[in-house]
Amino acid sequence: MDFMLAAAGAAITNIGLLSVIIYTYIQNIRIIKSYFTYGLTLVAALFIVQNIVIVIFWSNLYMAGPSIKNIVDAAAPYLFAINLAQTIGLAVLLWITRK
View 1 (cartoon, helix red, strand yellow):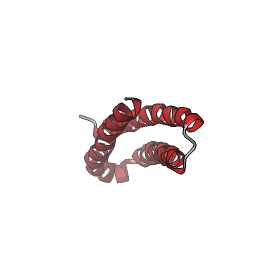
View 2 (cartoon, one colour; view 1 turned 120 degrees about the horizontal axis):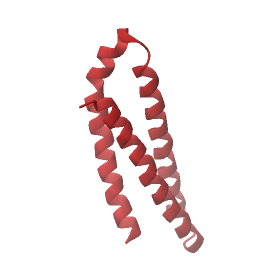
View 3 (spheres, rainbow, N blue to C red; view 1 turned 90 degrees about the vertical axis):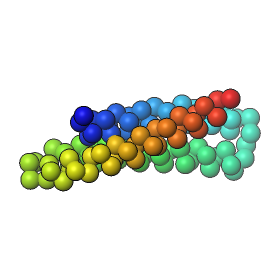
């Protein structure tokens, strides 16, 4: 399994999940104008930025050349595990948010 591609796929999935969550939060802001709702929207937006940075950083690092490829390949399973955990957490958050 290519963990780097799987990690990128999970990060892209996270961006999609977060987009739906933000859309829902913005709908809630129209009804419930509270600092909590604004805060949730900001946190979700920052998570999108984090996932975009992860995809860009790791793709640049992966293409840096053969000298660093071994380090990137060694770190890739850990990045995948982190992104997968975030995907599961965001899926649960989306499920709860949409109920």
